[in-house]
Length: 422
Image 1 (cartoon, rainbow, N blue to C red):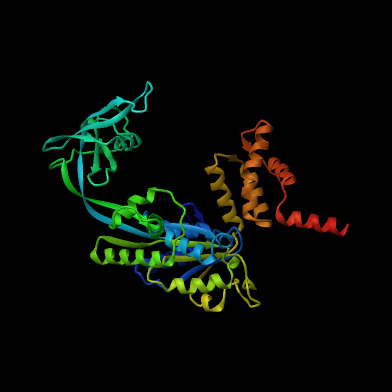
Image 2 (cartoon, rainbow, N blue to C red):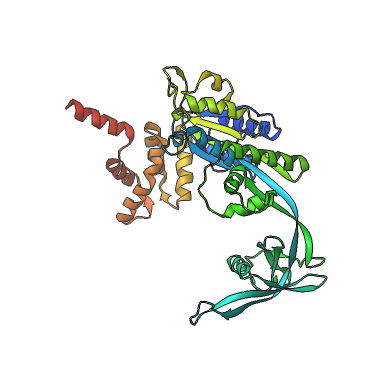
C-alpha cells in the first residue's frame, strides 16, 4: 500500500498504488499498445504522479512533457508535432568499442605560433599532452580544436581523461586518486590510474533519443555508423524530418538492437490537457500506440463529459471511444483538509517560510473552501506582508490581508456576476 506522505507526495493513495502497478506492468513489458489516463480536478497531482512514474522507471528513462494545445501551429503539421514528441520519449543506449588514448595527464602544453593574419596576437598551433598509465607513458601532439575541448572540460594535470582516436572527442573521467589527500574536504571524484597501455580499445556507453538521431541525420554528415549520427547531433540545423528518413533510422536502430550494440529504452510521453487534441490527432495517436517503437503514453485531463474537438460527438474526457477503450484510467480526488495542511506545511518548509500553527490551519481551511493552488499561492505574499510588519513568522492576520488583496477564482467570478447584475 502507498504511504500517505512519502517522497514529497501527499495523499492520493489509491492513484499512487495504481501508478505503482502500472510501473510494474511497464517493467515487465506488458503495457504495449495501451496508455494511461489521469483524470481529476485541477491541482490534484496528475503531473506530479506522471513525473514520479518516470523517475521510478530509472534515471536514464526519457520523460517528455507536452500540452494538448501544442499541436496547433501554422508552421508544423499536428501529426509532425506528435511524432516529434513520441520520438523524444524513446531512448537508445548505445554500447560501442572505440579506440582511445586513456591515462593521467602529466603534461599539458599549448604550442603558440605567429598569427597568419598579422597583428600582435598569437594563435595555438597544437597542444602537447602526455598521458600516463600503470604500464607506461605516451606523448601526443593534438589539433588546436581538441585544445578547445580540453578547456571546456576544465582538464588540468593530474586528471584522468580519454581521447577518442577517430573523432578527437575528449572526456574527463575524474581526478587521479594519487591526489586524494590534497584537501580536508573533497568535492571531486577520484579514480584510479588506468591499467594497460595508453592506446587501447574501450567500451563507451552513450544515451540518446530517436529525435536526436532524426535531427542529426536530417542533413547527413560523416560516416554511416550510429556513433557518427550521435557526433553530428551537436551541429544545429533547421531541416524538416521526412517519414522516409525516420523509417531509414528505424531500420538502422533495429539492426543495431539485433546485433546487441544498442538497447531500446521506452520513455514516458506525458500529454497534459488531452481534451485539447482534435479528432485527427486522436486518430494518429491510435496508430502510433500500435507502433513497435512507441513510448509509454500518459494522458491527463480535468474534464468530464465534453465534445471531441472537430466533431459533434460528446464523449468522456473529450476522448473518442475507440481510444478510450485502450486507456487504463486512474482517478485523482480533491484533497481533504488534513492533506492540504500537510502540503502547505511542506511547501512552506521548501520555500524557507516560517508559519504559525493557527495561520497554517486557517490557510488550509481557505484551501479547502477554494483550491489547493490558491492557498499555496498565498504563502509568499503573506510572508512579504509579515516582513513588512516586522515579523519573521506568518500570522493569521497576514493571510487575511493577502486574501483581501488577491482573489480566488470563485470570489472573482462572484464579483463579476454582481457587477454584471448591478
